[in-house]
Image: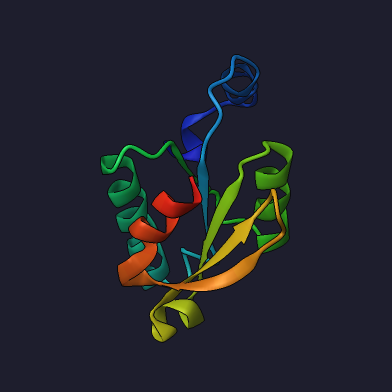
Amino acid sequence: MRLSDFTLDSLRDKVEKGGSFQVIITPIFPRQFENVSIMANRLHDQLESQGFSVLLDDRNQKPKNMFQVASFLQIPHRLTISGRSIEAGVYEYFSLQTNETCKVSIDEIIEFLQLKM
């Protein structure tokens, strides 16, 4: 699902009724960097096809704002995509539960998340 698909009330209803998300994708400035938008959408579709409950923050906000929403919604796993991370061939991973941060190879992200669940 994409954050822009929700109104504030519908998002609150989903979270309050136990329909929480497992992963949030936070693309950094996707409108300025087309490859960030492409990779974020591709990752979203890949994860959903593997059965993950995924929220893509597609609002084109500052990173701090996106991270606050992820924390507020208590989404346990955050994947950040930036132009630099794409060039390095990685996604930036953050665990809300343990505060673990690391870089994960784009090619290994599915397996990595499956081990974290």
